[in-house]
Length: 124
Image (cartoon, rainbow, N blue to C red; front, top):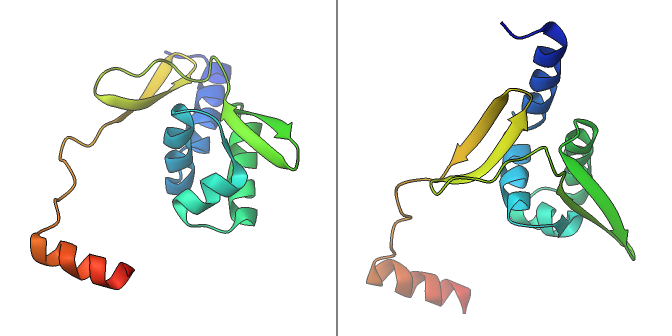
């Protein structure tokens, strides 16, 4: 049985990524540092919302931030993650537990020639 303090710490870390936007941000940051604007654009939320999500993750101990001029760059805190396996995108370390985000085994659908032509017309 896990001791209560360890369970509380693990739950706090897991809660920080138990929201879809934050989980997407976590997986993106597993690939390397990024600034708030980049992350907001990636997940399609306003920068103020992204700042809130990043603050939750930082307070949980998952992230570190560093000021680069006018931008704040975020990265995963060493020790809060583990090296992902070949079929994993990212791994959260929460005390004695690991939360592994698996890669989607199904490739994205390839556009049909008709769909590709329609997409090209709408982009141009």
